[in-house]
Image (cartoon, rainbow, N blue to C red; front, side, top):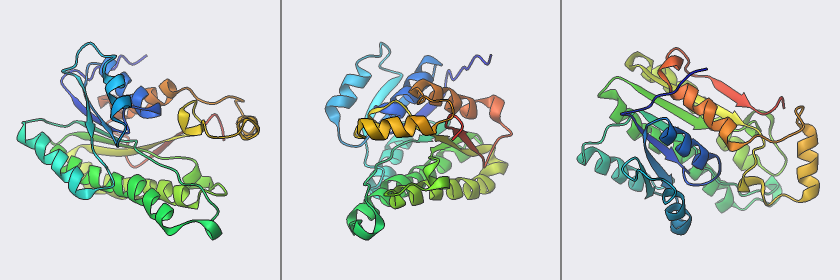
Length: 247
């Protein structure tokens, strides 16, 4: 068993105060990292999340709209101004706006692409700049089997997730010589509020489609993220680790 130690490292987790992102933030904190958990707009939820941690020097929530390039740039410039370094970025922020293509509003198409894929681009761009200085870094995109399989009513979401994979493979080649790795974790169905809007019938059907006949727990995804972010994973880059129970 690997005993992960991220002491002295700074980790940014987008969408880091809810669902999978919250589990990832907590796992890094427990492994000794200083965590900057990015959230979009739910201040009350973010404040409640960070209140659970005793060492507030190592867990902080920051409100940043990752789809807003200028806001992302401002966040990183402030991090640089305060002398902060960066070792790990987890691009976990994501939204869904489901509808069949024939009825999909253009603004819903654009919102999903801007957040899921545009946010990955903006966060990764400035993270790479910060990591280049120390010639070390880990970038992990939270993608989805939807990008590989496609699901009816999720063309925008599937396109954004497939784009994250292609983006990671390209970026991995660009930064490999700087000892920066770029990978994707692709969770299947996970027990979070993200699937809470599904009907009992849908949940039953989806659970039955999983060979392991259960949904993942958020902590199971977080453990995989920690491995890819660790020094032990130094030779793994440009890959997708699917955690879907066999889908």
